[in-house]
Length: 237
Image (cartoon, rainbow, N blue to C red; front, top):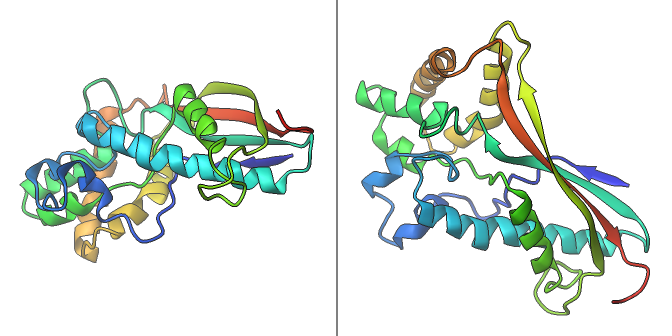
């Protein structure tokens, strides 16, 4: 039995700088709408971009993962696959509210303590999936060879079960630990947008203040986890 937990993070080989503007074409790097979001699944992100990420990035990357596991698993062996799912209050604190990272960076830009180009470049390269997203990726894996590339189809896997679980981040008393977890997970994406040390200090400080505005320490921060069990078939279909 194998288990994994970080599959919402996408394969970033070659960089992510162009991912945020995929829906705008080659000339969209300076488009003002890029200052509205840092997560592709938050409410302020363009729906057209989310669909591109879902079909061209997230589904393809997870399908490749499944196909490669088919090569490693022995017939009859199973793998438990776990990842962060959607909805996720770290990204959408409440309906129609942007993420604390986006709001913090926008406030800093408005105060003149962060260059807007940093916000336009910043994107967190992960895609929290739903059950439907996971099933679509598994279906796509059947069209990929066990070397992870298009070619010989029919990754010999069976999808045994798919489930989503709700969890709560927090200790019920303070948001300090929840914020430190949030920052540890996402600050790398901020650094990738080339801020100065002073700018990232401003972003961190503002994001921490926003945690107190957006979340309730007693209730915690709700996060969804996706899990599935895959099995290597003992014989061909």
